Length: 615
Ligand SMILES: Nc1ncnc2c1ncn2[C@@H]1O[C@H](COP(=O)(O)OP(=O)(O)OP(=O)(O)O)[C@@H](O)[C@H]1O
Image (cartoon, rainbow, N blue to C red; front, side):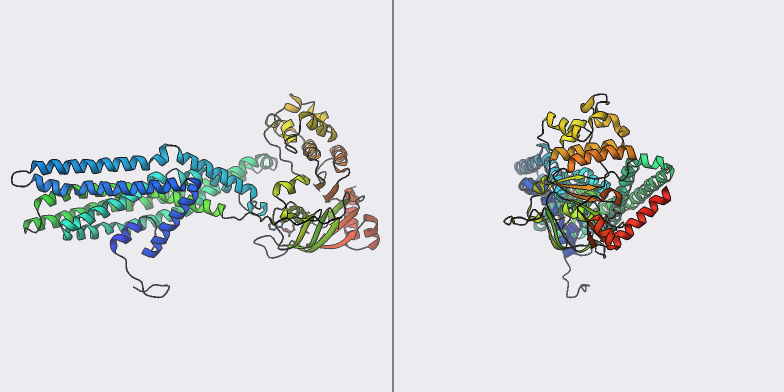
């Protein structure tokens, strides 16, 4: 047969194809071998520090399969001794004892192999994998993480880890048994009756085409099922998280409709999968039984013409009945195996996302600016248009700089790159003369305080939420920060004051109060550089006034970068960097830029006009 990729292809033996076909729905033996190796490599990957113990378990399962095959083969001499003229009781006893020994060896090997599961190793592997993935998520570029839907990541960390790890011991054993026992039996039968061995070796591959069909059907279900599950979980998370917004805009029904669609799609996929997998499973077990009966028929024929001993046929009768067992079991476990492969694939994909590199530290440059961007260009993955183009600026310590410009001009991207959510494709970003790629994530984050418009509060007390700014701060320092950020007035009104759990007061904190908590965190952190995504933009005048006082306390004696949406809030900035389509088109003070009459002056006029219109 011609290889579609060119070159001659050696047709593998049917038994090899059959045995390898167990592990991958591939069209050729080399592909099947590659499939087995990929699964094996992935299993060792997830086993991590326990890989050696998993290898040992697999070796023990292989020995157990050989022992079971040998125990079955003892039936040949046993029946020969039993059916001899007068039964040779000595031999019968001997072969019975050997059989018993082989069966005991099978049990001992299996038992020790399964130690991988019952001594807690499986639980250790699951635990270590979750910790490892959690750590990787922590170091994963935020820009890449943000592209995954929350549901995808939590499903991988939750159910995918279980699907990949929990069945790995049992499935490995069943698979090894399904291949190992018949191989041993055929090997031994070849010495007793080469014809019978050949018939067995030919009959067993009958399962291949049906099995392939089953794998293909379940592979399709795996793909569609995983997609349908991921979609449902994401929609569910989005629905519950966004319920408040949806209610506010009276869209709960519409969004629920989307969720209903996802659930209906999931049901459809599951129904189709059941239909597609049941028929081949029944067909496979039926065909295998017919095939094995055909081997028996052949045996009867050979007995009738004297070329096979009756004792050998009697032994074969029992052996073929036993051979079908692991095969049927494996057929039932195909779905679990598919789920495991799909989960392994996803785990590998998540693990293979490279974390941002840490470059070797260079000596600090004396008198360096607090922040510098040198010819920075950045394009988001999957997009063509650069979000930043050759951006350069230097900020002196303890100055206030505002980033202004139309929506989409690149202001937030500057902040994201400074926080190292991603690295720019060109240029260097430095903090106090040090390339941020040389700073460990913790060191970088120690130098930066961030106050965004969206404040995430964790389900802990107000005290602990503020303490997150500096985990080693004592209660008095947390209280000082809360006071400086003008939080005490509303905190003192809460049922348990600063010890009130955020979960209890839920959404009852106003936007301005949440902002002030976030500012208290930043004050406590006491980082030299403060990054503000104009926190007052969405507040009413009264809240804005209090939050502005809190900000004033935060920014004292610090280098501050403000992403400004309303120009009126940044007229006092030392420098305004005016962005347009990813470039800095102007820079200077408010007065100087107005006098210049360029892009900034036009933006100012536009916002002024808008204010007049509102008035
Ligand atoms: N995660 C992302 N993936 C792809 N493109 C993005 C992503 N985030 C932003 N962009 C694009 O990069 C460009 C700059 O966006 P950026 O968020 O920096 O603008 P901005 O000036 O902060 O806008 P706004 O004032 O509306 O927040 C825009 O064209 C935007 O569509």
